[in-house]
Every structure is written in C-alpha cells, then in structure tokens.
Length: 205
Picture 1 (cartoon, rainbow, N blue to C red):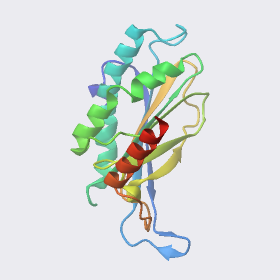
Picture 2: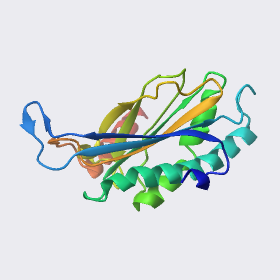
Picture 3: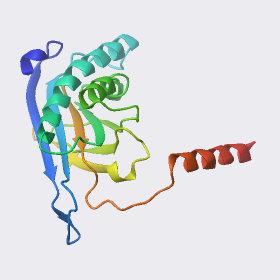
C-alpha cells in the first residue's frame, strides 16, 4: 500500500486498535472496536511559513491519496464485525509547519476518501488538528457516519506516535468505530433539535 502513495514520502504507518469487553463492571452487549490508522510523512511545505491558498489546495489533494490508504487499512480490521457506524480524523503537524496545513489535510477533501471507503455519509466527520512535537497525543473524536445525531456512535480514542512527527513531518490519522460500549443515552431526535434551534434563532430577532 505504501507504493500507492506517490504524492508524499511516507516514513511510517501505524494501526491503533481498541476492543472494549466491559465498562464499569458491565460486559459489553455487542462487539465494540475502534481502529485508527496513521501515516507519518514528510511535510512538503515545512519551513515555508503561513499556508497559502496554493499550499492548502495541494495538501487537500494529498489528503485524498493518503486518506484512501488509511481508510482501507482501518476498515480491514472490521471484516469480522458489523459495518462501522462511526468515523473520525485527526492530524499533528510538526513544529516547522502551520496549523492550516493540518486543516487542509483533514477538512476540505479527506472526507471523500473516508465516505467512499465505508459507503457512508453525509454526516460531518469530526476532526482535530494541532501543531506539536514527537510523541504528542491527539484525541480522535468519533461521530455517526450516517447520522450526525447517532448518540451511540459518539466516542473518542487517544493516539500518539513515539518519535513522530518530526519538525518537518506530519502525522495524519483516520478512524472508524462501532457503537460506544453499552451505549444507552437517549437524546432528542434530529427533527426536535431542528425545531429547538429554529425557535432559538427566532427569539434573537
């Protein structure tokens, strides 16, 4: 798969898997698995200062290529389970980079690769970006893949890579998951929330 990525020089691939069997002394009522695939690659714009529109556009293109490979690697860990119902993404930009470089990798286009791999959408994919040094952790936030109001799908997992990203590197992460362990939070429906928001906006006028 590394050979499929031509746009950047990948140094490492990582796979983080969390399988939860119980919580608070209660066994899980279903298989619970969250998998995050990560890639550490050279930042082609390290040391160039604030990201330009051209830089952002190029990194958005790169995100689709790298994101496709990461999505395939993560989803391969679900072949024995039901289709994942949650997804999330994150990026750590090394200290010679710019936060907007990270934003370009996780916001404009990587969702296309993630949705196509899963066959899901259009729910917004939670994303998290930071500029930091080697070994820094980042929370990958999960939200519903088919329904943004899927409370059972909302979860998070923390990942980090010892020794990465270096100052001139980027660590990009793509994650998928099942429902949260023993999920039992009942919330308002999307229609109810939409009405409440409309009432709030009307009250501001």
